[in-house]
Image (tube, one colour):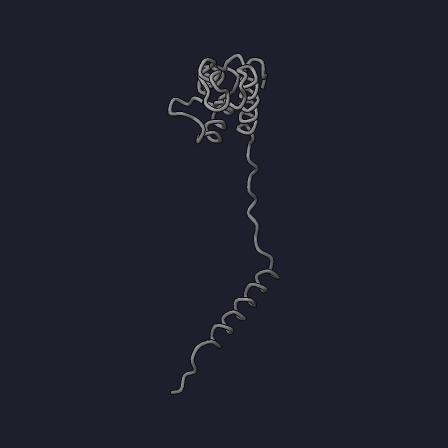
Length: 134
C-alpha cells in the first residue's frame, strides 16, 4: 500500500467547527471532513476491497464512502494531519486478515472434571429438598 498515492485519492472539506475559540470559531473553517471512495479506489486489489468492505462495514456510508471528521485542534492543518493519520490507521486495521480458527476437543481429564463437578452440584441441590415422608 503506497500511502502517497492513497492520500491523493482522498477528498477533504473544511467546515466551521464547534467548541473553544470564542468569536474566532465563527469566522474560521477549521473542522476537516475526509471522504474516501473505497469502491473506486485504484490503490487496492479486488480482494483487499472485499476485505475492507467486510471489516469497515459499520463505518461506510450507503455509497461505500468512508467519512472521517476531525475538529480537535483550532488549526485546520493540524486537523488535516490528524484525520489522515486516523484514516491510515483504520485502513491498516481493515486490511488485517483474521486467523483461521482451529476447532479443538476438550481433554479427557477436563470432561471427567466437568462430570464430577456436575455430580457434586446435583447432590448439593438434592440435599436442599424437603424429605419425602411417604
